[in-house]
Image (cartoon, rainbow, N blue to C red; front, side, top):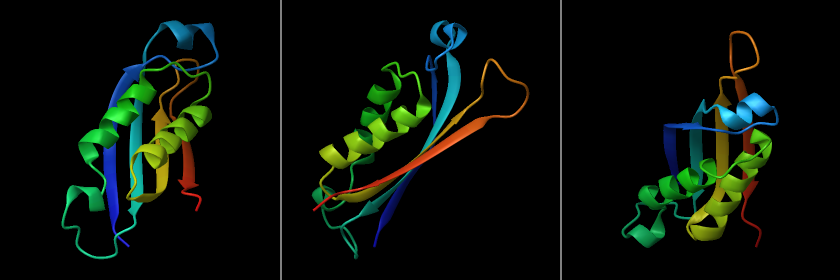
Length: 116
């Protein structure tokens, strides 16, 4: 199985349940691992995932407000599986540096597989 990874996609947007999170943009990093249907070399773009299109899908999701980043990861995976025929599974990891906490960061991971 072939995999395609997009790593360290950075966004400065508003997500969260607290009023401060809804009004002050925060840094988020998205990492994706996509499992592709092809098990050998991809000869054409339709046999793989167009990473430019995948980035555009992630950017559109990240620019749409969501209260919980858990739901955001689910939405990203759902969009990728719905719009990228060659992707069998999508694994999304979102890292967030909270405005309301101390040092450190929060990570959510979600995996989704195409249903046949």
